[in-house]
Image (cartoon, rainbow, N blue to C red; front, side):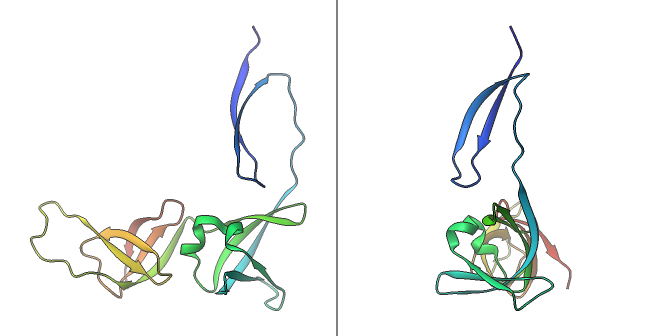
Length: 156
């Protein structure tokens, strides 16, 4: 028997994942995917406005469906990467770790837990993140944008 490679292939346009088996001799045509750094400006009426890094007047907008779950971590004036295929933007990549200001944090009561615990805090983009009890309102925290988890406190 010939060796077979079992793969999962994701359609970047539709988001569907297919399971396929390929022979060792199979070949493919590589997709021409472009990556470009842009700046997120602001959100307005269910549209997200971006501009090119070197040309702020060259603006374009994207619907939330093009960005996906990462909309909750889009911060004004943050640099992101757009992925395009055949001149159509198919995805927006945020930096893996971003810093956010905590705007709302419930007070932690001393002696609440034996080993420490977590509480839900609201960051400046109105997203909720689970953070340790010592995080207070006004602190700057680092969040992993891929998992949505707290990854550290930034020293002031």
